[in-house]
Image (cartoon, rainbow, N blue to C red; front, side, top):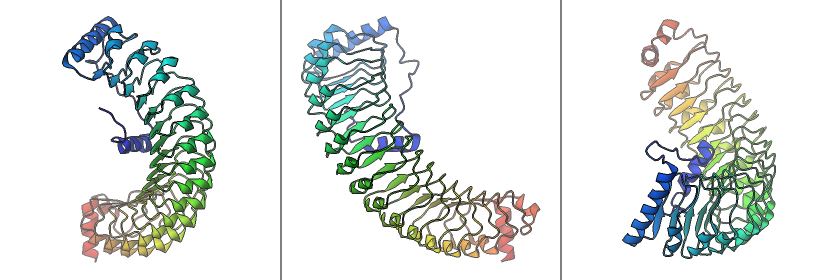
Length: 431
């Protein structure tokens, strides 16, 4: 089953949340004795030919070589050789002239035969999780290729000729040792998904902005200290992963990404957000946790479709009143800051379900928070609160109210020890 594009959002999700594609585990029932695996491969080939199939699955067979019977299977269109012990592919593979999908991920391949580049019918090629130290320029001869996975190898560079592969729609070069991206990458105008996380990139070429079809870009876990202004030209971009780099600022042009729905820029060195951030009208998930932000621009309130906002681990002392305009926000994490107060306008955030604000310097809670009737979790532990407003008793959907490690007087300690429902009942009685 070809996975091109049909898995694009699964791939982006895994890449952005987990940090990269992970190898599938080898289960005990899949493990094979090498001799048994070779015989099993021969059986599978014979059965497929007898049935008139045009695909083969020879994964998890501990193969160190491929049976010669395979090369007579010229009608083959899909070949899965992943999770074996192949050190290379034999030149005979070029005899499979109709092959469109070739998956050889998670082997021990360090070299590729020149004959591979003669397989011009290939649309998908997965070489991920091998031991390749370079890609030859001849890879550009695969003029029909739409998916190329070379993740988790030993690549220090991508050949400039990769720009000639104009049919590419997915390129996964994550988990390598890349220090640069060739400017020719900008010629891949059909590219929809570009995975470059877990490399050693210190910069991006301006030509990155020419990727007009790009929907997903993962750059987390690199050494980027800036982004080119041209990144704002990625008009189709939906998901952008920037976590764990060295960014001190986001370019104002980032506000031009009108299609952007998810941006993770946590674990950087950002000291401020550009006002243009408010132009991201499609943004739903925004993570800038664990940076060096001391304030938020008022324009943050213009993010009318935002549902998740992560601000933990910064140096924020206050929120702008405009934060109350985030009426679609469901989750707000702002732990481990220096917040002394929450603005009363937060009571207008009608969709809020989780407000996590422990480990700050809060001395009071605005009564307006009692208007957040959809709130299910309110974490205010490790602050300087002495009183809770009775209005919090109106939070009828609240399931977790945590106020540990505060010098609370009202409610008294014995009520606090009773947990969420005890606190809410006390506050309702007070009101």
